[in-house]
Image (tube, rainbow, N blue to C red; front, side, top):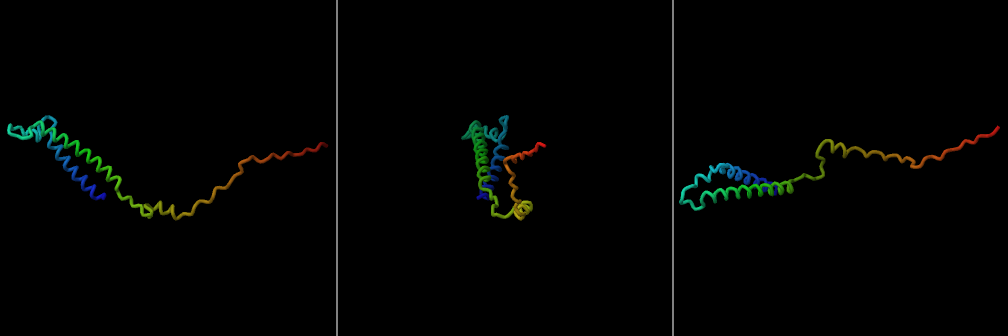
Amino acid sequence: MFTLISVLILIVCVLMVLIVLVQNSKGGGLASNFSSSNQIMGVKKTTDFLEKATWGLALSLFILCMLAAATIDRGNNGAPKSVIEQQLQETETAPEVPVFPTEAPAKEEKEETAE
């Protein structure tokens, strides 16, 4: 599943690069090439389409990235992932902490004898 989503992310990225390169912020780009009067869509509709396509691809890229993060294989098969984790699993548990008394010891009064 993760591989399929990764391939879709790559396709969306390539399409987004192409759409952004076709656009020009000063009215040039692909929209300026379609300025003939016999054009079906016209210049304004071409720029509207390119803008909507950019937003749609950006949204789909965001959603696909979230899905990829959710479906990534974490490899939780119980095996230690690092040498440190392996050493921690092999070491014995620490001895129990000694229990200290919680009450103060009673003071012993010294009996002084009057001599």
